[in-house]
Amino acid sequence: MALSFRYPERLIMEQRARDLTVLLARLVVGATFLAHAYQKFAINGIDNVATGFGKMGIPAPAVAAWFTALVELCGGLALILGVLLPVAGVLLAAIMIGALATAHLSSGFFATDGGFEYVLVLAVASLALGFSGSRYTLAGALRGNRQVAEG
Image (cartoon, rainbow, N blue to C red; front, side, top):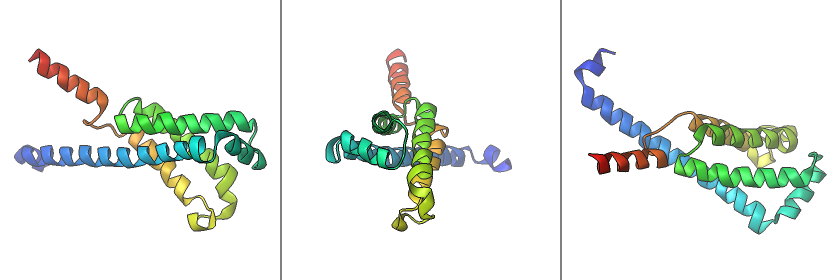
């Protein structure tokens, strides 16, 4: 703790590095969710996703397919832009936990075997990013622009 009083420039550099790494993680995880939404809407088709959900025994498969795809789309965008992060993090984690419980748990841990490792990482990463905060968000950029205009 004494270092913080003696080396404030080090703390500033560490905070910038934290903010940049959080931004990078938000961009990558957000883009991953956007890709999954695109897959559901454009590649597989939402009707085929609903059929697959039904075969897995997911209740109201059409509603679940639309909900999942929309959460992936909106949540991925929210992560990228840095808006509504806690809401996005919780919703994205929830759909990943749902995928873990309904489609991956019985296949063990490893994703190569259809297991839950990938969805678990996405769930926890979403939560962490949703509650980590960062300077580099859309709201932060707007605040910065407003401060420049006012100053």
